[in-house]
Image 1 (tube, helix red, strand yellow):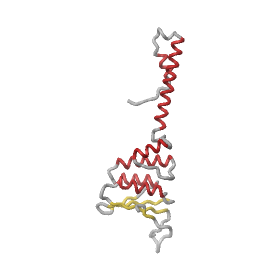
Image 2 (cartoon, helix red, strand yellow):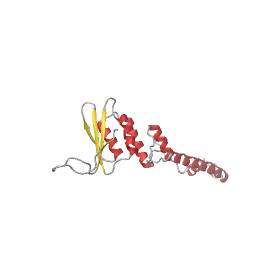
Image 3 (cartoon, one colour):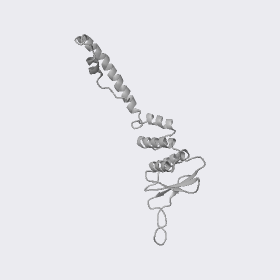
Image 4 (tube, helix red, strand yellow):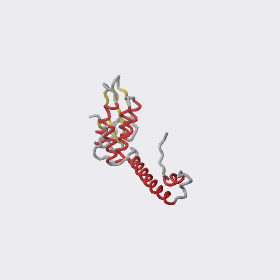
Length: 185
């Protein structure tokens, strides 16, 4: 069963009047007034429901979602960014630490495909390269989420490189550019 809004309470109510009352103008007017109030109530309730869906919530309603799933709104996030962060947090809360899910979550947070490298039995690292480094607030979010998406007793590390970061190249010498930075500190 799915819920659907009814937009024509007055017409439906008048159509359901018994035939012996349908000719009474006063009764039709009274029924129309009552049905109009029902329509206003239903429209208001549907607006409340729609305004509080994660996809349409804003401001305080969005903060309530964040509190519910354990994702505080750190400084600098717009409603759209925070909504995406809450969606990622919901996914993180439901994971069991599978590598594919960890990759997906971190990739969504940093906005590019992250690389996962297994480093022994209980250790892995994540790496990604972005044009501009991620914000300090996002670094905090990532560090807060990592214990949630990683199983107990498993260590991890994360390195962010920016486009043109310092690395070995195919020719003699080193490339030029900025160094990557560790995120897990």
